[in-house]
Length: 347
Image (cartoon, rainbow, N blue to C red):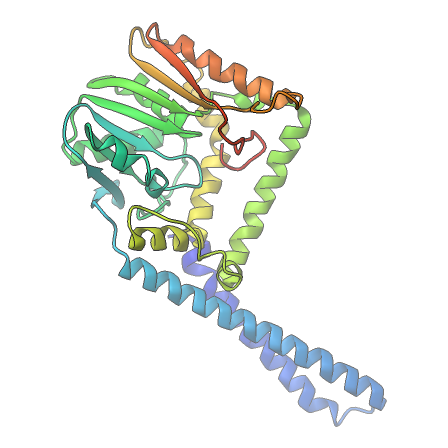
């Protein structure tokens, strides 16, 4: 159970009603107080404003909780839900053929982030995308969210779904750590790895000091975003009305999912265990002649602009991924936008 999604709305609503009631009671008592007229007027105005604010917060919280329940009930997942460690996990497979490509999204994203990738790959082989615990349609699970635990759950999910191999794991961002861990611990039936701007173990130790400050600031922003989500502020401001997925319904679910505090909790837990995941994967590989493909964004599309220290470090780490196999290849998507940064939440 996620505190911010399942528990927090109740106390917020009760607190809002309680404070509003106290303010209303105080307004009624002002007439009997021996205060100057100007003070009673000012206090009535302030108390009335407080009542409006707290009642609005309570109403917004109620509306947001009902909206989340509604959309998750109406827009059912494509694919199937399997029970892993007592919790539901979502897997969506399309296409036919071999090997089976398993898509693992970056931190903060779910399976729908592959909306344009999966249909294209499905034209040539079988492709499966899944939601890690707490993202998309998969239940939030208790306990640490490090690489070992996440890959154990993925292995159990694929086993239950009858996907025995050959398998190619394709991981974006933080999932680059997870697919490395999977390759080291479950090499059976694994026929290849694909890194899409994949994270590398303990990369935070190699970034500039100002970048580390940016990571700390990002963690504080997540906490702020959680409470804003509980209050329904993103929904009121229209931030829940964006996104696109495999279909209209899936796109709607994707946009609504961004307004769930459970997603932020899952994001936070994986972020908190980012170093642990790095320590678990720092000694993984090399993987012999396992085919490995590395896709990297073009972090220096303009020759007129100087390259930042952060870009240089990131490019070096991407190049180092080639040492994981004697059959590796790196492809830089020339002209691609520079949306990935080590300072961001999406590792």
